[in-house]
Length: 163
Length: 280
Image (cartoon, rainbow over all chains, first blue to last red; front, side, top):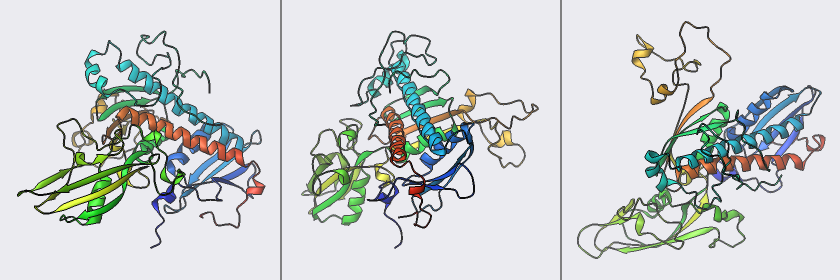
C-alpha cells in the first residue's frame, strides 16, 4: 500500500534536483550532498575516493531509509579547497578508474584472441565480439602479456560523456 | 578525453576462463568499493530487453493469464543491440514503437491428441536481433506451457529495455561469484569452528593464487584487499565480456551525470533544503 514503485529507484521526477547541497551550520568547509535516486553503488565509491584525498577531513555517507531512494554524503575539507571541488575531482578520478578497468579488460580480451593463445582461442573465438560497441582497438600498454601488443595504436573511445 | 595512457599502477585484469556464458577474471590493484560497485552494476544496472506487456487474444490453457505473462517476462531475450533502443519513457511515441520496443507473437492451438509443449523459441519476433535466447538450432529454449487438445493461446507481447533494479527479469546475470582474500589474511572473517578452522573450512580454488600469511608474523592491520576474483555467469541475453564492458560504461555514465548535476548549481546557499522534505 505504501510501497513506492520500483522505477522510483532511478527515475528523477520533474522539478527534483539530482544533487542538492546543504551547508553544515556548525562545521567549517563542510557540505552535505543529498543525491537523489542513487544508492550504495555510487555512494560508496565516491566516499572511498574522497577519503583518498589528503585535503578531505571527513567523508561519510548514509542511506537514511531503504525505501527512500536518496543518499546523504557529507564532506568536510581543510581550508585549502572546497567540498565541491574535491567532489569534482573524485568523480573525475573514478571515471578514469573505470575507464582504466575497461581498457585493461579490452587488452585482456584482445590478448586472448592472439595466436599464441591456442588453447583458450577455440572457446574464446566463438564468444568474442562486442556486437555493436565500436572498434576493438586497444592501448598498446602491456598488462602482463609481455609486449606482444606493441605497435597497435588507437584506443577504445566508445563513451560519449558530455562534461 | 584524449590520450590518457593506462597507468601501470592502475587496475589490472587477468581473464582465467572465458566461454559463451561465463567469464572468470581477476581484477587487481583497485579498491574493494570499486570492485563491489562493478559487481552491483553487473547484476542490477546493465540494460537488457525483456517482455513487459502481454496482450491476450486467446488463452484457454491451464495457466492463468498473469501466470503466463510472468513466465513470458522471465524469458531471456538476446540483447546485444539493446543500446539501439530508447527507454519507453524517454521515447517520443505514444504507447510504444519500433524504436523503444520489440513485438512478439505466439499463436498455438493444440489440434492433436497428446500434449503440445510450447517453447520459448516459438515466439515470433518483429526484430531479428532480439529473440528468445537459444544455444543453437537444436535448443528449443524454455518450456512456456503445455496444451491439451482444444486449448489455444494467441498472444501479442511487447518487449522493452529495462534494468534489473526495476524487475529481476532484466538482469543479464545468472550469478556473480565474488571473492577476495581467500586465506583470510586480513581477518575480515571470523570463522566459527569446532576444533580447527583449517580442517573445517575448505579453501576455495582462488586460494592457489595467493599465499597465506605466516601465522606468527606481526598482523598488518592497515592492509586492504586489492585483488578480487570474479566469476560472472550470464543468462544468455548478453555475452559475458559485453556485460563487464557495459557495466563499466554504465558506471561512467552515472558518474558523468553526477558531474553535470554538480556543475548545475554552484551556490550552496541557494540550494539549502533545511525545511523541505528530502524525499519527494
